[in-house]
Image (cartoon, rainbow, N blue to C red; front, side):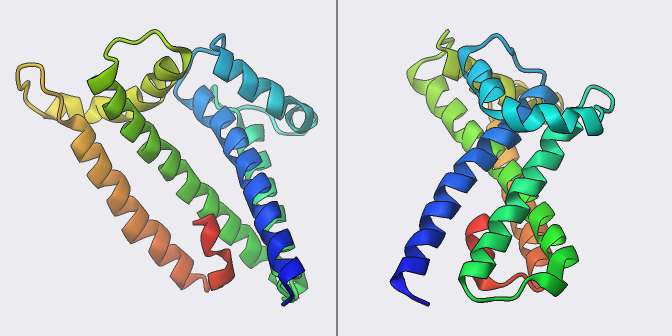
Amino acid sequence: MTGLNTAAIYVIQTLGSLYLLIVLLRFILQLVRADFYNPLSQFVVRATKPLLNPLRKIIPGLGGLDLASLVLAILVQLLLMIITLTLMGYGVGGYLLQLLIWSIIGITSLFLKVFFFALIVSVILSWVAPGSYNPGAQLVNQICEPMLMPFRRFLPNLGGLDISPIFAFIALKLLDMLVIGNLAAMTGMPQILSPFL
């Protein structure tokens, strides 16, 4: 493998993963019923609109969920994996079903990471800017709230100290370690695709 291939893989993975994150955010924002008039939400909507609108004609929503954005995320992940493997010199013709499974595993991993890092940002914001009206802070809180509510139901009130993020961190990390890692190993995902996990 030449240095040019390595550089191409790096650029494609970086830019492709950034767009993949935006597409998955579109699904997550609709899943958590975030404010779509938020400027950051509007950016996500505009960035995904060109590829998402044609898909919406084929793939309808289901129960208020935007399945077209989820399918687009899987397709973008699949394309990134195919390009990466091709540039590495692997033949991908006979592995399309496996690549699809690896794409779904990669999307699930990214889904968990979005919530994990949103929780980190939310905890930091609760210390330095509680009750902030910043559009970014509001969006992060809207993403985190549905995940924290089940923990808050079972945890006792500790006089203003919210420990639910600790349990959410533990749950997300366990899912990542026990489910994502094992699925990737069981399906034989090559090491070169590990940046997608």
